[in-house]
Length: 146
Image (cartoon, rainbow, N blue to C red; front, side):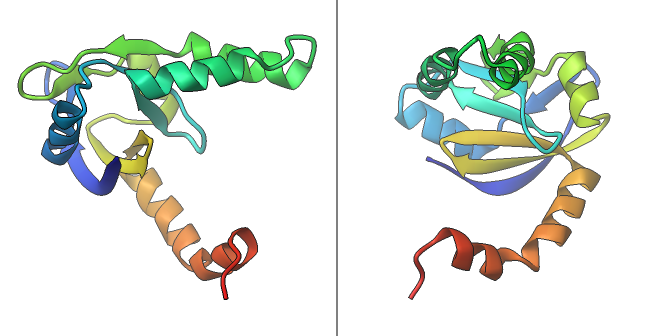
């Protein structure tokens, strides 16, 4: 659903703009609301409302008697906030999430099929640089490639 890599700045009011292609996809699919929260690898996860509800159901079924499940749910859900982009696609990312991801002025917004990730630009470049060399090796281990 969401694909691609886009660079955007944070405006003076602390807003980030959802890439035009993502806004088109949202409109085509009747998506108005998104949820943002702490992601993995120091990025921010952004889910369309329907996908958020699927993830919420999955994670709330983790056993609260297991310490790792409690810790994950605390970090994931305590960071969550609903966002409703305006007509230009702008939305505010809470300061605590920007601090978590190290975002000050510029961000990279990437589509990962069922979610969007928001990265601090230098962090994304570092991750991409480290990971791009292992792309084929990772594919061989993860996928049944012939």
